[in-house]
Image (cartoon, rainbow, N blue to C red; front, side, top):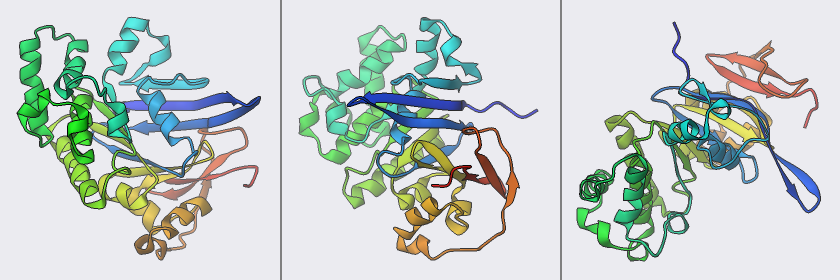
Length: 295
């Protein structure tokens, strides 16, 4: 029997009102995150990828659609059970400085996640915080310092430790290295990969950079204008991109842009998106959106 996905969204929609206009940030998104997987979500600014990530951890409420975590539909739960379930989903934000409270020592900020998990003894919390700092490559005594005393890379390590504190099963990393220098980016990506090996973690990794996604992810979903337009393994997307938008993303990375196989697709209708849409199955779980209304 096939196990249920760790996280699954079905027909997810999110609309915002802005200047008397309605903006559709998500327009019928469906996907699944498997146990132990790193799923990349890639697209340009405004594609809806960050909105999807925020809904996955409970920071945003969808206009329509379903969110399932560990096989349970979130919107049908009681508020208390919903909070407990969503505590298993944590987020690492793009800018570590703005995501940290400048007035609190970083150890206290990490410890709040342990307190929310049910730990009430602050001596035990402080000991666990020291262990978490050690796990992310920082000195244990840094717990008493404030965010402004750290470099950008160190602050992102602190943000990672804070995300790990509630013992999550799912971590959504929203552009976690885009604000960092290239050399520091590599260190943070290596840290995320190592933490995944150490614990029972699955990642949703949001990025605009295909090279970063290729380094860390097992599978990638390409988002454009609030929809997923192509999804498959990282190698399949790089070697055999089918959607024009995916090709444009790859062409922006010279070492990826030249690869084309021209494999002939097979049309298979999948009920994943808007009425009139269908997916083309290229094989091996690689699918590309074919919309009834061409873009």
